[in-house]
Length: 171
Picture 1 (cartoon, rainbow, N blue to C red):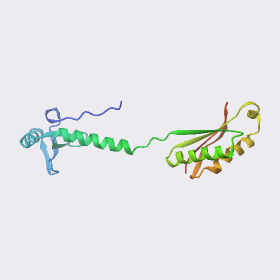
Picture 2: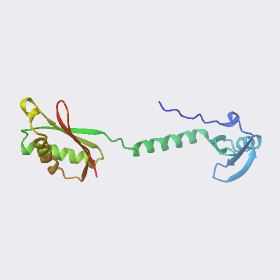
Picture 3: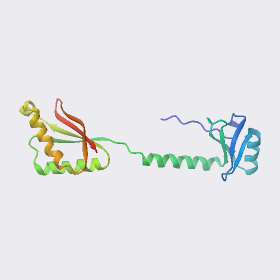
Picture 4: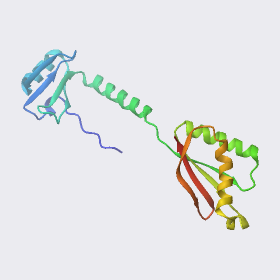
């Protein structure tokens, strides 16, 4: 779980002087802590330290519940906008038919459109493992030709224990 800095309110604020902003955005300027607390109490609201690292620290007079609600809403919006890229993979064999290749290429195109990286695995069995690398690259090219999205090869074709794999990503 990520560390969240604890928000200081009212008497938890340690700084002697604060730059205070009112509940409707008005600027009260730099005043001492007692005056700021008094103003907040008169309005029936809380004094919330918004920027503790500023010189002098910035505090806002507002309802703490509303402040927390607004912060949670901001965090949820930021989380919704963030996109995690995944590595998706498609697996083909030496003898995979054209129709199946087209289906796999269509799926890879969808993933590329969503911003994911795609690993194309050419699965090798038996004698096929000992064929030339040029042959394997031709087989992988068959799949790559069918992909409709623009892509670039981010990791060249490498031979592994189960076959040959190649990584592509959106161009």
